[in-house]
Length: 453
Image (cartoon, rainbow, N blue to C red; front, top):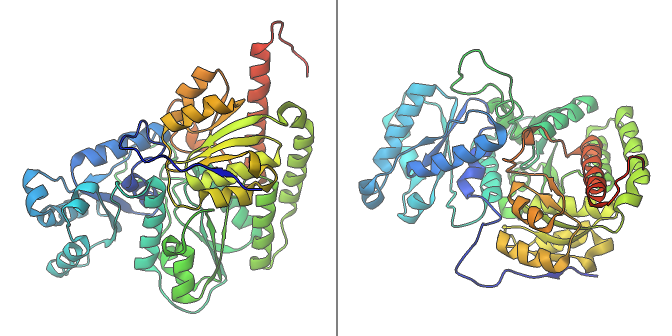
């Protein structure tokens, strides 16, 4: 069996892209490093757009600096602007790290950002904050590519060799702050030291402040990133990332650290793989609390299958999330008839087929998609529900079917940052949401309604 892979036809127009810009993903990842200020090398509009998007989802203040290109810097280069921006950010924020991400404009004019940073360091021999750079032109890739590139750049710049330590590197990809908190709980329950990168569980979903904090508390400490080069293993949640973009593979090649690249642990199968491997690497048994969570999840599958078995879903979002959710939906008897993403890794179809082999011949995969593509295909496929971020709301409204909001961005509901997806517990929450959404739709469509199931 194989999926029906339909690459997007060659067109010169995109209508409502199913992706966000590459430096936005980098800024999200950088917000998960302690004491860090993201700095975009380009015009102000990029930072404004990114701040607006992130704020709408996380409901937290977001500072993103800009080197503030003008017409002259767009023509003669932005080296002077970047040096001034580094000085200003250092003076105003006193950061531990300034994370520089390029934009379309600075990439197009050919600014040599690494050279600018070396010059700045020579001219400022006093101990400045750490500075890292990642190339993120938005005409190449998606916000997910920018996210992975930022994590890899941080490790590439900071990881150090040394005596091996009994600690685990965990690179979770773009998940919610609630997911990050749950992963930290799992690692603590297993009794292992770890580096979680990035960790924006507090910086993007923290407590209320009495006074404004220029840099939100929390994040992965720089010292912990340096220790990634001495860990005993790395876990990287991604079903589609290529070796040359993988942080785990970088550590393997440079320091000989073994790593497991796996789909996000959503669903019993994926969670079993993650927990089993974690027990193997740590040398500790799976804590009993997770055995019980697994048992409750399987029991709920039995309770809920009659409401959702055979339902058809349209699924879209970041490639890694789509792959993991496709496997989960197939596991609970929902056929993900369309798996779409704006990403173009070239690995989506193969990864979806591997994640959901039992229904692969009934799945259409579309990468490089926009929401016009998704809407056209959805009307032909007649789904019962839609699973994805808030961008699918107009389609769900048109088709009069439920939208199960997952991923980023969720900017038409409160609490997107607190949605839990990972682990047996996160799967349980997602399963209950899906079943109840289907039941609610059936109640609304019934001429008489019903109160008991």
